[in-house]
Length: 113
Length: 116
Image (cartoon, rainbow over all chains, first blue to last red; front, side):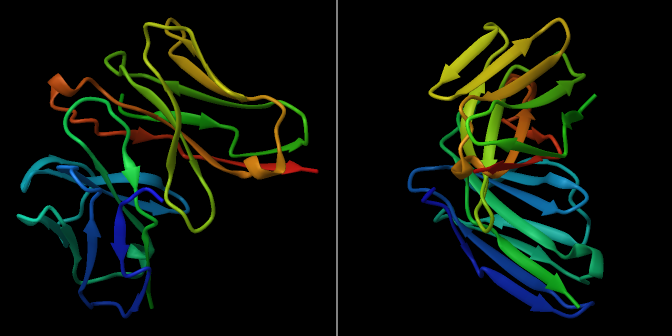
């Protein structure tokens, strides 16, 4: 168990809808990362927060947004969903800066129908 | 320059054999090269990692070989076991002082099946 908790585990929704994915990082970890994993794209970095502030952005669509709250949990908001957004969304956390291990949650599987 | 290319896509090995997965990168600024293991229904978990100042790192049955001049690194799994059957991802990261903040860039993954 990595100590990173993601909810829900599964989410099925229709095109055009909006969903929120939630992540609780490991105790003491200030950095939260979001990754998208789809069959044809591998693990794609979306966005990173450190202690409530956005620190790095990857290939995140404008329809997607995220935030990290004072208690350090993070939410990834996906809106105007399209079929192609169906994927596994992973949250990961680490203690601080530098190249220390990223600890991944077990992901949220999003299916857009 | 941000890509990490991984091969093969899939690999079948007999129990007791050696599994070898290769990765190549372009960005010479990368200075951290981890390997992650992912089982179905689980998130990736760090297996072993190396920095470019060493050419090899071994942890149990798992070894990373690193060739800085060729910009390549590989994972060797000795005495492969059915329990090693999983998807393996290589990754690379720039130094944190470049603003990379450990923004890991992953390879596409290799699905390993170890047959008994």
